[in-house]
Image (tube, rainbow, N blue to C red; front, side):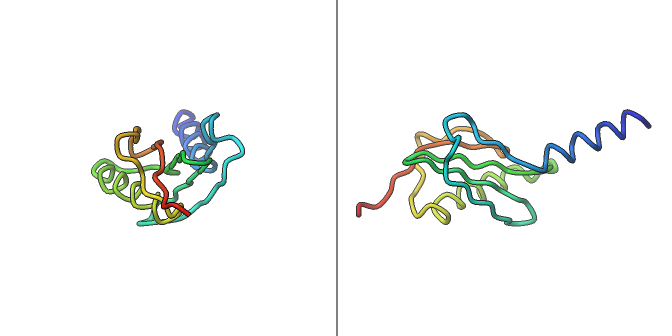
Length: 101
């Protein structure tokens, strides 16, 4: 019982806040909810990081990754440079290709 309570508290704390990777400290931050999941997007210049907050059940990860990819142009106005993207359904980083002007 005690272990279950500790695990519950730790998982609740893990879903409360997202901290960016060091290269994104001080970056522009946006938070959105899509499909029942919360996401935080950090942008600094031509680089982007997307973090999913909270728990994802098995079988949801492919759709979550697709949602994360769709959030990048929606929130930044730029498309992700596919060859630069790395990460999974919890955290993804990459570079942006933005329209001139």
